[in-house]
Amino acid sequence: MKVITSREFNQDVSAAKRVARTEPLFVTDRGRPTHVLMSIDQFRALTGQRESIVDLLALPAGIADAALAPPERW
Image 1 (cartoon, rainbow, N blue to C red):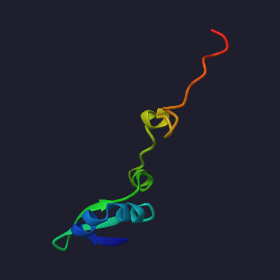
Image 2 (cartoon, rainbow, N blue to C red):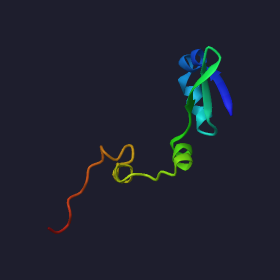
Image 3 (cartoon, one colour):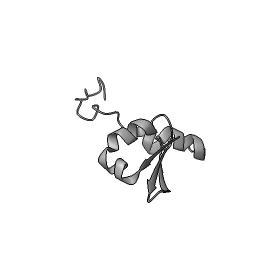
Image 4 (cartoon, rainbow, N blue to C red):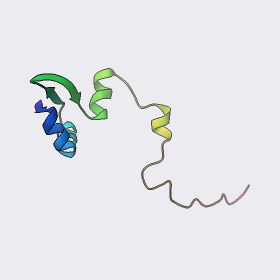
């Protein structure tokens, strides 16, 4: 588990997100933990949540711009 200050978090959010992909990241303010950043997979495992129907039906990135062919037969 890694700990960073809120100032470090604000200066490099991308680095914080990289760390949070593999382990929870605690963010402190004036030396006290105030927030925890973690991946969605870690959060779901912790809370026992599963993907919602909205998550399952969402189009993958890049697909929304793809041209869809009409069905061969109506």
